[in-house]
Length: 284
Image 1: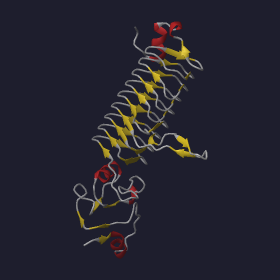
Image 2: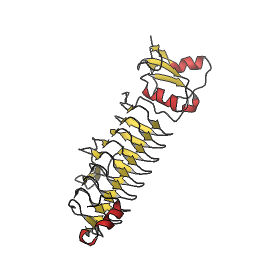
Image 3: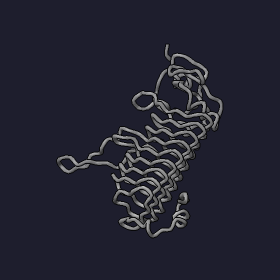
Image 4: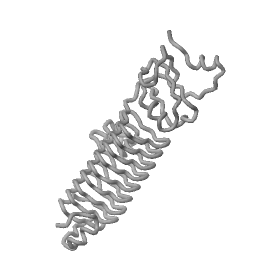
């Protein structure tokens, strides 16, 4: 026998707000063991309520009205269940959205109004600050025979390693035909844009305003200055410094320092001590 929850609530003169699509259930169960055909109930609010509801498999959950807007429905418009997962000891801020096929590692912090659109994986101990968008489509269009722009499909994701920090209002696009990757220990300042299919190595520092074009690769220990731009489809080696406001349009070899527009090597003009001060690199 199936139950229509809306009819039951209305018959008891109980006011409610519904999020998600209409559905019926066949039974009731505790929130920790309920399945998609069960009705469950959560009296907890705040972080405890969010944790219980987001990890439950229940088809319908009755909860306090204070949770409205904090929890996204677990059933999408096609009736399929998302596969989002949240690890242990995580913090999820207000009005944050964790979309389909997203996974957050243990001990991670995701602050307010963050969007993990889809196909995003965060490693353990990551920090994602307010207003960050991860996993949206990249900017990719092809012209048809009439010259109209048609969006190129993005079917891959974003893979973020352990101990990565991404500061406020940055964006990382998901890959089209290969994943966008950020390596362990890398740090992104505010207003950084990482386009689709980009590969960023370990322990990189991208300061505010850095823009990285699609399908570009950065090695390990790369430092980019304020408002620097790195063109699409190029390779940046390990231990590279990109000066503030530089426009990089060619590959850069390991250990180089580039500046200007278009960016050129200035390594021979920079002393070891000056280089250390510029980006916290190890002295040679």
